[in-house]
Image (cartoon, rainbow, N blue to C red; front, side, top):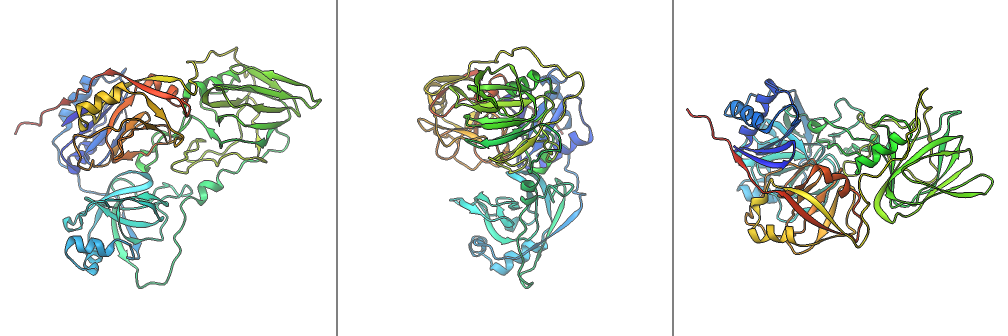
Length: 534
């Protein structure tokens, strides 16, 4: 068992195989330990997040040693039957790889009982452990740009079902009409870790419609104005304006990452300015361009990117309002946020908070998972909650850091690992010594970087494992992607390093056209925990 560093309070525990990983996961589930926040299992690893003020790294290692080496418990979850029409594009190719007929592939798939080992990739996507070894096939050498929702596939030792249309590299053998993820269902993910799964061939049945699992998520985004309440009428937007809060933690079992505001310090500062609780939903405005008209009175606070706030009164008079201060608005005021000269994202909070329905316990919009309120567009009327009695606005707030600008080089502290040893020494040196350009192909999912490609020393396929906000994953191109808040829960490319916790918010403000250099504040130092002696 190897303990691989991620950053303070997070480690990746590497084991020999899926059975060992799940046995250790079960041991912690059956005998929990104080200080562990979350454990995310994957094909060979456990990502463990813990509170260092409660549980030291040494104590965690002792707990791992005590619990390792046990047997995996038998799956006892509910049995879920998945109807499948075996019409997948890769069925014939899979049969050829296995040296059997297509009908034999279908028979083996239907006669096997699968277990949902862990979740990831997308909400509702469960990695189903293949009980029949003859069904093990490699991923496609070239992933498809688009795999339809409901597609049933095979890859390595797993079978899986795509909950929504997305890119993917699994071998497709069929489709199911079931919605694997539906926010109106409890739980939203049809398959939970531990669920037992059987597939049923419905090829002879009548035609069916594949149900979209995301209709409800979009419908839940509707906003409107309560009668008599103050409201913001959105006149125009630039890039999508999103509701955000601090995210939906604790949903890993459904394949859902935390998401939430990219610059959490600025987000919380906006709420402090107007007297809200720190997790109250606010608007995340990317690169300015937002204009709205007030209906009624309100107090707003804008933080984050260095933007100019212009207020035009109902009488036509115009003035500039400061950021990082509370600003009182009157009925009829039109407010405009300019394109920022520094940073990427502004946060606009209003005293009392916005009237927005949470989705799965949070108002955060996860752009990758497509969960949460839809983007705010022109014409929307957003109600403002009445402020509680005694709400107090705060004085000026100083920004936590200088906002980075286009053309500047931003230095980010990083922790080496967990897969630094998958790269050559020359690649690691190059990663740390060069400036990486921030490309326009960047989003809330991640910042795509451009520079001298990094060469791997281990070229085999990495089994899927959990990733975190701030991970620097290196795909086959050798060009790193710096994961931000809407990153996938699991990934299949090695992570060379992770941004240190104190620079995560800064990373969320780095604009396109800037450069990034990485400063390693720790060396890659995996720790070995010997197996128990028998």
